[in-house]
Length: 167
Image 1 (cartoon, rainbow, N blue to C red):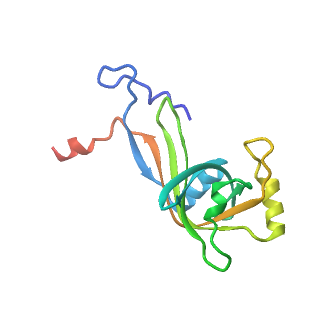
Image 2: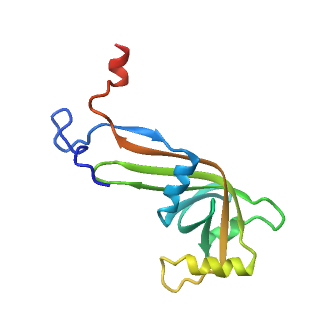
């Protein structure tokens, strides 16, 4: 994701990063980008406070599936069977440290435990643990309701800025 045109002197500062702009992503673009990575962060409520945990995921259609293990705090957020689930947010991004270009996607939806044994076995083969000797005892499925995202792209140096357009 390196872009040579972005790393140029800005206002005399050779280490500054050139201007960029935000481009909103469509739902389809956001989910496609989410599908391209395997690590994200789930946001949930724990003891009435917001909590965030890094987790690995796979996409199953539009659903996000994350692995859980016995001692996972996330197992406590699973809704009782027969309910739509617990509201969570899931965020993943790829931002280049040098150019500051990249993207970020946030999904908000209902999360519930995967209870079907066949589905659980299938996800176990798809979801590889990042920590050795962690067995997958559960999987959590997030059904996206709201999908938002943006892409940081290099600003066109020829385009008038918002400030100069109003002067």
